[in-house]
Amino acid sequence: MSEYDDVQMEYILELYRNPRNKGTIENPDITHQEGNPSCGDEIRIDVKLDGDRIGEIKFSGKGCAISQAAASILTEMVKGKTLEEVKKLTKEDMLKAIGVPLSPIRLKCGLLALKVLKAGLYGIKGWPGEEE
Image (cartoon, rainbow, N blue to C red; front, top):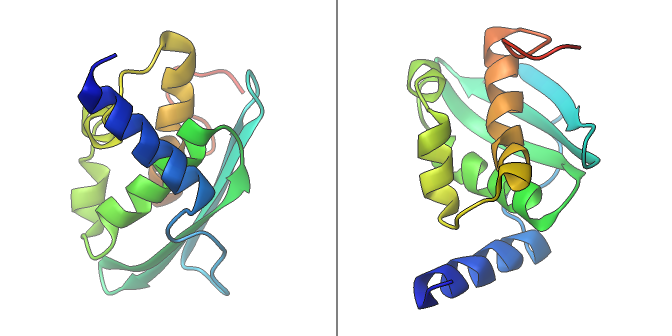
């Protein structure tokens, strides 16, 4: 691990201890919740729209430092963006924002929040290619 990775890991741990946008929104326009059965992470994301933009966004749930920090990072990334901009976010965008290399096992942890947000935006229950 490089010095940069150490600094990023500290940032992840800080967000885990003091997440941004943690909580729920009363009467959200969009809400979706999913878990990662292989590790027990659970994330719910609530969105209040301002026209076609994300006016307010909160997440709740439980899980490892990576999944919870990633949810915090994602909510900061998308606040104020249009729904179309958010729909274009890729897993590479999310991994770059997390900023630390993730093992194949931790990849699902790092991407769970993005999966939950996109599923909520598209109004889908499952993720393409995943079994229920």
